Amino acid sequence: MKTRMLLLAALLSAPVSKLEACEISENCPHHGFAAAKNFTVTVHHAGKPLPGVLVTVIPEDDVDIAGTTEAAGSVLFENLRPGNYHLSVSMLGITSVYQCFHVPKRSTPLAAKRTMTVNWGDHAPETRQLSGKLTSRRFIFDGNGLHFDPPYISGIRLTLTNALTGVQTETTTTPEGLIAFSDIAEGLYVLHSDGDKERRYEPGDLLIRLNRAAARTDLVVELTGPGSCSGPLVLLN
Image 1 (cartoon, rainbow, N blue to C red):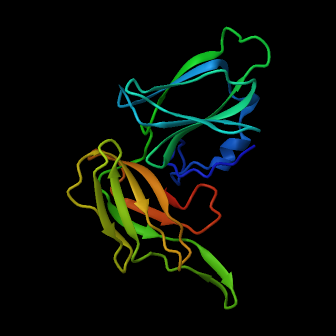
Image 2: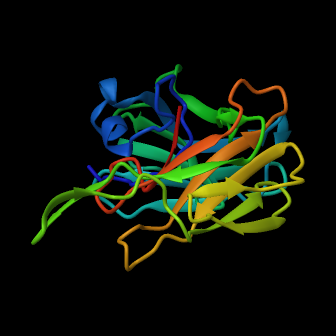
């Protein structure tokens, strides 16, 4: 089965807001729901159809099949072969839906899904303000022995993109690792980190919602090095 490195906001309740692709790919009871060979996926956000979303059907042993939602928010996959699949729904580099399903080998059962509606970004973690700290808990073992990264990461450029309008705002973390985006309207955003090759930090993306009524008051974002199952940018606390 293919492994997909997903950079996600959490869809599960956990102390660290992340969802690890490798856990999902190994946890698929009965290969998920049954789907018809002609299968339509409709993507909504805030109750409205969302065009321009990349929907990918990932077979176990074949080439991925991808389509982009049109004005009605839908994409049709036709003549899917019997077998096991994963469904990925992505926009602006963020995959917010990752589910498994199968197309039965025999005749299509009455209970098989012919359509499916997913809500992109509706489960993104919320915060009252887009400010906080960029941190690291990474440790390195090299010729000088075992040592930890500085707890806060300076000099990393961050880009905040409104997920629906595409409007962008940039900032760079301070020597203390502080993040500060000011005068940002409420809404759904993608937070992108450029990473740093010299320090071995990889670029990452995080889906997050700015909501003045949210319980979380600010951000503590962790940037990791290579090899993280969940991706290099995760939201803590």
